[in-house]
Image (cartoon, rainbow, N blue to C red; front, side, top):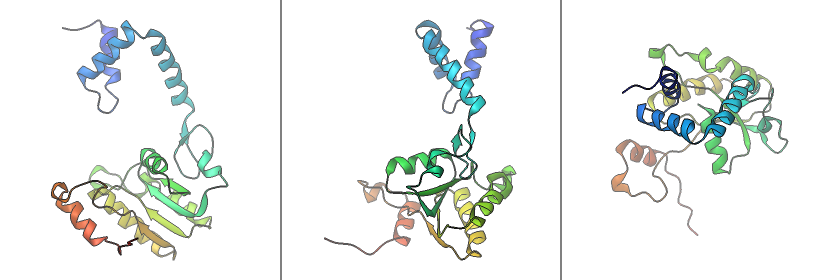
Length: 201
């Protein structure tokens, strides 16, 4: 069965969202049309404004409607620390976890030669310009623990070593509350290689 052409267009439009397949798109569309038309109008208005006004921070490249985001403007952040992440979502996850009070640089992806994504595509020239400003003492590589993320981290590390800055990488290993028998081999191997001295009470 097919809906009217306009409803079909709505279903197709909703499917641009990640994780939204035909069934989910249908549920969303029918909910908006049958029960939540005011919410749908609000969504249209806010989405239109966001698409029009939200861009990238000139310093860290996260999403913001201002030239410089609030984190980059904050005097409470430690300017000596710069954490490099793949996406604004990764940055948000680190902020939500708490404990980090430095600055960020968002790559918006990772190196992937097979897909034609090179250093310029992930803003490494802008990262160089950011480091040229001075003040950064340690760069924290927080790319994802995937093949592409690791390759990106190694590439950036090679570029930064020439500057004499301290380099660190996020530790990966056994999750808190996890049981060893359920941890995959790659994670377990990395946990062993990155082990730290035991700090007993």
